[in-house]
Length: 327
Image (cartoon, rainbow, N blue to C red; front, side, top):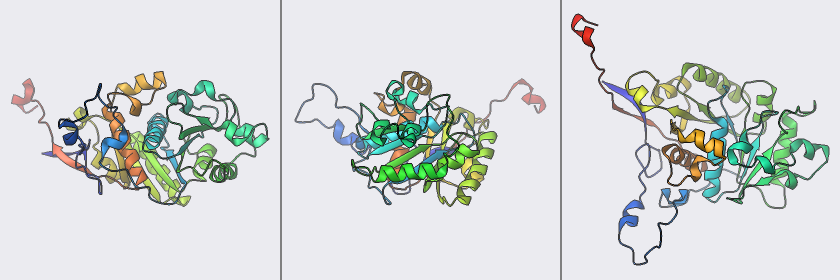
């Protein structure tokens, strides 16, 4: 008996498994004429033998949403955003969660946010003053909508966020390649505001029925708003539960939602450690499984590519004592 699982076959990339083999591994294992004092750092650019080609017109405005809270939207925004920066693209990440922002914590930038979009709209500061540049990767910048435990003015809505995106396009430093919008949970006014300027969406979900129900509802709302380019990331996938038929497989999720698959992120205990340290997974050395999966999702996002799940053999269930009696 076979069960759908999360091994991946990207449609145009050079790999054919869930964690694509690095084609440079063979060359790295050959004896080199130039000895290294220590091993060279692992970078996402070395994941393939070429740099990804940016598809579409810039800036690519991508909203990362889910509907249900706690599925990993902010974690995805932080790790995909920094992966894009490591690939050489300029990225602006906007935390659109009003009053409950967390993106600055995951990036370790909470002590450097002095101004927000609210101060920019009120004329208290310039836009470049509200942008927080990451120390590790200077082509990655963070922009927060408001300060914690604060409320937006009544006039703030989708049009204000559209103005903000247009201002980022016209700034003197140049137009960013990607604008990532971390969408708040739910489908209320904050959700509508966050998706207004976007032209593509990444839907983050987990393989449980409650998250899938909310994800299906959000998909319909995105399509009603005119966003047709929707891809999904399946987060917190556990191999053992899928093999034991205790968790839905990635193919089951695809069948229910009918969306292109951008990435599959395995369950990883390192996520909690990286969150508490303000150090995203993709910067870990050595890289973790979840960090590598985020890097590959960022690669596919650049080229507007997708992946597909394949089948693996399922472990036979162990028979208990009462199996002799048909139990």
